[in-house]
Image (tube, rainbow, N blue to C red; front, side, top):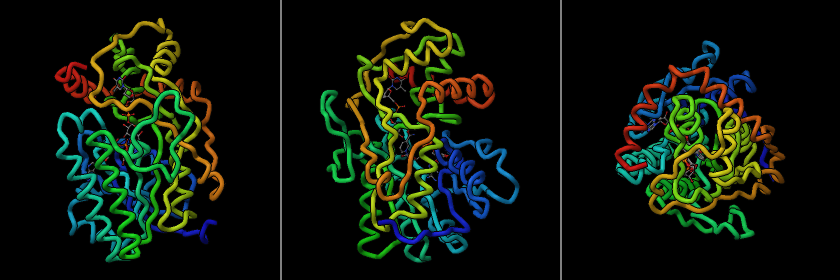
Amino acid sequence: MATEAFEPKTIVVTGGAGFIGSNFCHWVAEHEPGVRMVVLDKLTYAGNPGNLAGIPEGRCELVVGDVCDAELVGWLFEHADACVHFAAESHNDNSIADPSPFLETNVRGTYVLLEAARKHGVRFHHVSTDEVYGDLALDDPARFTEETPYRPSSPYSSTKAASDLLVRAWHRTYGVAATISNCSNNYGPRQHVEKFIPRQITNVLRGERPKLYGDGLNMRDWIHVDDHSSAVWEVLTRGRLGETYLIGADGERSNVDVLRAVLECMGQDPGAFDRVRDRPGHDRRYAIDPAKIRRELGWRPERTDFLAGLAETVEWYRANEPWWAAAKDAAEARYAAQGQ
Ligand code: NAD
Ligand code: TDX
């Protein structure tokens, strides 16, 4: 059963200027009034300081820096009691084009943070992905559980798997007070336009046709980012040390169904998309069995109406073109170079 609640006062949030990290900071600012956040973010192409706008003064400070910078990390950990580690290179297609920053940030960065957590006695929550378990066949009745063997497919997911294994080893060998969560595909506001749902929404907003990889029958298990935030908070504060918790919201859908839903939501013909070159090694299906986090921590997703969440997300991108316009040009230039 869950240990006594841990009540952090100051949390280092790595990658807090990215999609999920910034939504987590907004969630904590709203739900946990006694907590102060220090965001450590390198502001890569995926980080945007504007993502933290609107969080009240004094609740969240941004430190621009690299999780691989041991001196900086050590200094921040001296003044914190917990770290929630979101920072990563997070996009599969980029990892296929150039794996090197994935090794550096996802593996070495996690190592640097773990060493600092060990030295300073900081509680460490590692945010990971269901992709470490590889993929399932479309007709497989199984879903991933905490016992599923690791079988990552892409440079991205293999570096996330490596980082998970480091966390497990640092807990067992050095007693670092660590937990891990592996979540399914997130959607919601502030997601980078390189990712599937925002890429298609912004294509339609620009009068361009959405792009579907391969046959589009690949399944992803969608969760609203706010539900991911509440689950991470539960694991950080009430999870058992050394344990892994899978986070999912029973949201399996094929890519082609999601794409048709985006088009319909935006008043377009649901067949108005292009099929493009498939992703090399493209995982077929991800699916999470969230029984453990529900049973042990009583966590439940609240944003389970996918079409309502999608409609809100479309409205967010419609209202925030200045946020995404430049990133869109750069992402589409990368896709064009890859034939996608
Ligand atoms: P993102 O790419 O939107 O954001 C990553 C953030 O990390 C950016 O702000 C970037 O500037 C920062 N960053 C990158 N390298 C850094 C470094 N060396 N030092 C400091 N900061 C650095 O990613 P996201 O989609 O928000 O994902 C966040 C985390 O959640 C990742 O660990 C990812 O593996 C995991 N995850 C994502 C999903 C998903 O659906 N997006 C699902 C499950 C798990
Ligand atoms: O233009 C596209 N067309 C398309 O068909 C893009 C960008 C993607 N796709 C497909 C590929 C995937 O099957 O859509 C699906 C979702 O793609 P991504 O948004 O790139 O996500 P995915 O590869 O599933 O990984 C995501 O979920 C797990 C996150 O990017 C990871 O960080 C997270 O770990």
